[in-house]
Length: 377
Image (cartoon, rainbow, N blue to C red):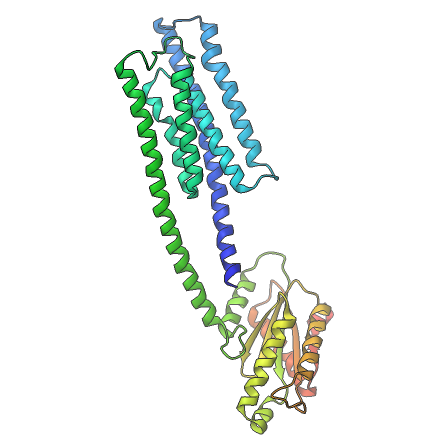
């Protein structure tokens, strides 16, 4: 049960990661669109003031068309990756993160005249911290540093670009930008460390709360769900607005009081324990409960009446042949009442109907009675 609960939490985390991945993709798209419009505005201003050092067609080709095609290609690849059915979530995150760095590299290389663009590489690094993955953030940081160095040292897209080797100030700015980016990556790693500690502590507290709730819902004697667990299951059933169907079964061990009075409460408890074990072995995905005393119940989901009756017959058989403390002469039988739930029915009505069916079974003993409306169905 603990493992299934952990898997449920991890599944919720993956859903959140998927939403963040979409946000990461949208941020990349926003960066590309914003850069395009800014370059258009700057181009108009430079053309108006006569500061364009090349022809207008060449300016449009170098600073609008080519970067737009490159960035659109990156966005398209990211889109295909996110919607791929063959790639795992982790691979998608890694690819989209690196592609974002490539987009920043294109923007930085083409618009390198703006010194503030040094810090555009911090965006993809920052967005990886949410995943809490040291390796991903480290790789993204290293790729960003390589992209920055490659653009500054080996590419001269803008003919007016001043080489970092031209003077000490340019070289100093370049080296400082590298150290700032490295420091930013380290800070992101520290943030991840504390975020993981916080998540681990939160997970531990959640597991403790879950285990406490489980203990409160488990009957100490039979180790199946108790009355509290039953109320929670009925509440979930009532709140279920899907197409799931429910069948409710109430069970009473025949002549249990006489068995208790004749053979003692120790044997009676052994009888209850054995019956609880039989329920767990036969119910499969259905949920068995100890309703109180020698009364039990089962809540079946998406099962037919025939399947439910067959399960009840199997429980009757297993209980009849069970040995309690070596006493094979014990008349171990049980009576069953079966009722079905509909969306327009109050849970109390379901219990009353099923209890009526059980009452009829108890008159005959060792019988399975289906509530008349359920039988019609």
